[in-house]
Amino acid sequence: MAMSRTRKIVLVLSGITLALLILGVIFLALLFSSFSDDSPTVRDNSVLVLRVRGAMPDYVPEDPFVERLFGADTSSLASILSQIKKAKVDKRIGGILLEVDFSAAGWAKADELRDAITDFRQSGKPIYAYIEIGADKEYYIATACDKIFVPPAGDLFIDGLSSEAMFFRGSLDKLGIYPDFAQIGKYKNAPDQYTRREMSDAQREVTNAILDDIYNRIINTIASSRRKTPDEVRTLIDTAPHRAPQALQAGLIDGTLYREQVERELKKRLGYKDDDELRTVSAADYRRVRPESLKLNTGERIAVIYASGGINSGSSDGGGPFGDQSVGSDTMVKALNDARDDKTIRAIVLRVDSPGGSAYASDLVWQAVEEAKKKKPVVVSMSDVAASGGYYIATNANRIVAHPSTITGSIGIYAGKPVMKGFYDWIGVSSEYTLRGKNAGMYRETEPFTPEERAKFESMIGDFYYNAFLPKVAQGRGRTTEYVDSIAQGRVWTGTQGRERGLVDEFGGMERAIEVAKELAKIPADKSVRRVVLPYPRTFLQRIFGGGEDEETYAQLRARQQQRAAFEALPEDVRRALRYAAVMDRMKRGEVMAMMPFELRIE
Image (cartoon, rainbow, N blue to C red; front, side, top):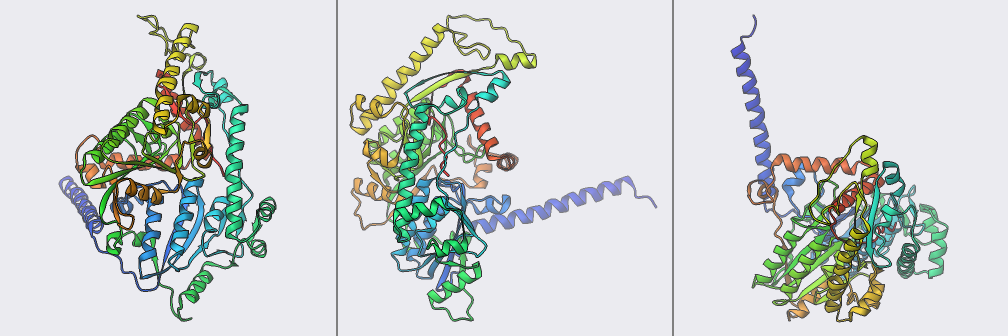
């Protein structure tokens, strides 16, 4: 007998209701599990297993709910460093097994990890590195550990450093797009990626100087760690890659062992019986151990503000459509003002990992730092890169701390516009302008600058460089404008080179910056401090239900995750091209950019 229409409707609605009920139960289960404050069970003499891999951003808010719901990876350098610091004082942790995988982090982050590993080893606890396959950076990090193990079939591609520069002029010519740019500074070669097909002499000079500095320091560090001479290390690099047995014979590693065999080595070191199972705790679980339970992160409050990514107007973004974090001037100014006005906060540490961006937005953040300094110390901690606009927002801090491998400087600006006429002609689009005002057509997409417009345009960006950027660096660093101009000109420096020229005060990472902040705030050196991240990280549910301009729906959050996943699935060179295209699009209205003159990737 045929089912009636009413019954069909009732069954469909019942099915939908049941599905929603099941989803609701799952949602509530995730909700309560994410809010549960129960610490994991950590057994005595356990080994903390940490993995170093991927982009390793400075800071990502840890949200268990998002991790469970979206499978999002919230690992960050700050999280790894926190786990190592806790493990050092946690009597239940007997040692660390560090699984080192390919990492896209820069060399300054690698230095910061090495510093944390070295500090952990002062506890007398072992920390072993396990590398299945690794290149220079992965091996460099591992050399800070007590021992390095590679499986018998593994490889070490420690074959030296390389830097790739990408140029798009050929593609733009084919598309009929003419890049009409101007820059201030001999070394401010950012437009070169659009206007040239090869490196300029200035870019080649800077790239070689940076590579020499970092390469020599890596060689000396490895030589010291592995008890070799620098010449021996150079020879091993020149004869790489090395299979695991060759690496063992050369003294680069301490054993060719599989993962289970490495665990046996740890058991011996920690005094386990042969038939005992190694007790391990994962990073995901150990993150739930509150630092306060180990008498860490207590005492006077110091604000930590992260400035990671390109600098734009508006709000910061933890990961835009191109998967990158960004620094929004509105977000940064509010965070600095909140820290300044909070009487319980004794000092501010501004952590910068930015190649720059909008000169206007950078200036707004600079002013907020200037105002904050009137009430309490501001210390800058430079990560992988703090250049151009990233240096602009750092220059007036009370003290600047950087790693020797930090990329900094690039004091210079550029601006321009893409002229799209050839492309529009190609696709059959025509434009007609009706203007009022002598310079109303300056930013027309279909016409290059006229001589009069170019003179006006270059005067504008020159004024910003000579009457804003240079004087503010000179004021912040206690130097003359003439001296700053002599080391500026858009030139990029390493942290070592920057310190020699007065752009950086001392070497170190976040830990050293906190120590300096304590000194300036007159907090006793032996007193612990509580780090307060500003702006306060908002949970998934707060972002959906909390209101405000940053409110997002579940659908928007999910769409952003999907956009990011799609972008990350593209080849790296395609991703870089899309980023450059986005920057070029921002400049079509003449926005002045304080960005690094080229993307410096050292692998």
